[in-house]
Figure 1 (tube, rainbow, N blue to C red):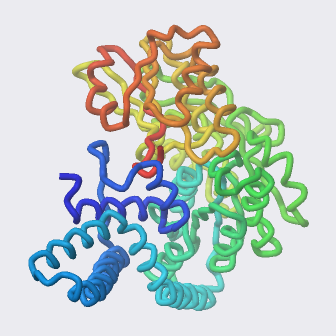
Figure 2 (figure 1 turned 180 degrees about the horizontal axis):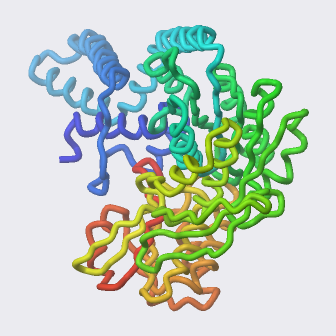
Length: 487
């Protein structure tokens, strides 16, 4: 069935979408994945208006070329039947190479696409000018942006009318849509998650929604393949400081070494606050009496600010990172004069973000699954492995396809993952791809038994056969999940 013409077109469109319509990456992905859909694909193309236009233009281009060939070939073939068969074969060949026509279709649409985006951004900027009292909080970083956004929203909504960007609407178009559709004259605070792939991305977002408060969650080698150098990655994150309002308050992760090593180059008279999950000396907030629930029900700790005791915080969220996020919530809560009682209520009632260290407990089988499949960066992997190590009374099963877009650091990072896992996991399940061999090597080189490593050809098979590898009482960590464009 995978050789059917429409299956080929829709598959190639799907890969194009996963590569965010980047033509170069699209061609590279197809060269690795093949021109025909495989049985391991887990999702399909989403037929947005843009996608429908691309498919339509793809079809029209093929027809135009086919009619031109038919006109040229009709003098060669005297038999209309042979001509028709020949043209059908040619059309099928065109389908196999649909990526060429899809790229051309995207290029044909690009002027309209560009104009539409520019108009939407222009309208969004104009609307913000009508809201002079609105406070904008910008959040960027290599990891933890969405969780930080959700945390700050939960804290600040206790006192204010707060709007946040939803889902992955962290691009110029997504942010502009949110401004136009959700902000009103009654909105007090707008929390903006700012996504980035290359230098200048955050600057462009700051030009739309210039922050009054800039938050950097941390910096690592995520998307290094696109950035090319760590210097580019670092400077791009700090665009949220450079292009914020002149007196913007800056909130930084004191636990992140790259942030701490570089922030003084970008701070120009800004007031700076620091949050930490590990009692870092740069943070004024400290924790004590830390406890982790062995059944996966959460964690608790006492929080203090200097000599002031702020009480015991109990959260159902498992990752230690949430401690830093809660402290960030307190810092900004006090910045906006929210009472301690409301801040404590917010801290104790935080909800985790789906697929980010999300606990899923099966009472019947006594199996605890930690769903961290959205996580795709090295710091998140360290957090997950650290959490897995906290479970002292359960067999620990670890499942991953590894990290993507780590460029020249791929081998080093995955060897390190294997090393960190070697003294924690009891069973490791890996997906065969370009990086998991390094994880296996890191495991074995550090004394992990090779017969405790289970291999699968693709993620689809992992999920289908997961129950064959786990048993009652296990804790299972699922870290990262490669989309179908990776290899």
